[in-house]
Length: 96
Image 1 (cartoon, rainbow, N blue to C red):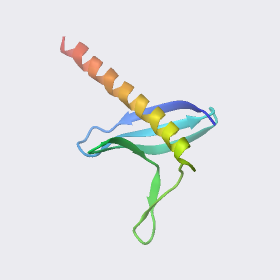
Image 2: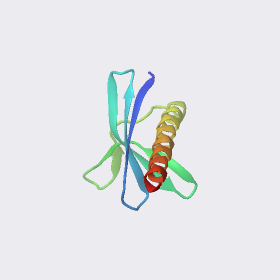
Image 3: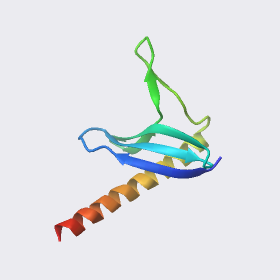
């Protein structure tokens, strides 16, 4: 299964969540609400989840193995950094 599209929606408010992402696989299947989260040692992705009746959060969709998680995280963070760079470039152009 190949990642064919990654769409980043940057979160504008302050906090640890930096973006919400949708990832399309093979132009046939999409997973929404993957979150880009900041922690002290860098960014990571959190899969979409829901709160259970006992107050815990459970992933709705997630990679089965570490290799797939790393592939997904790399693709998402690459697009996130591109979005940030593009936004910063637009800010510079607008200030000139």
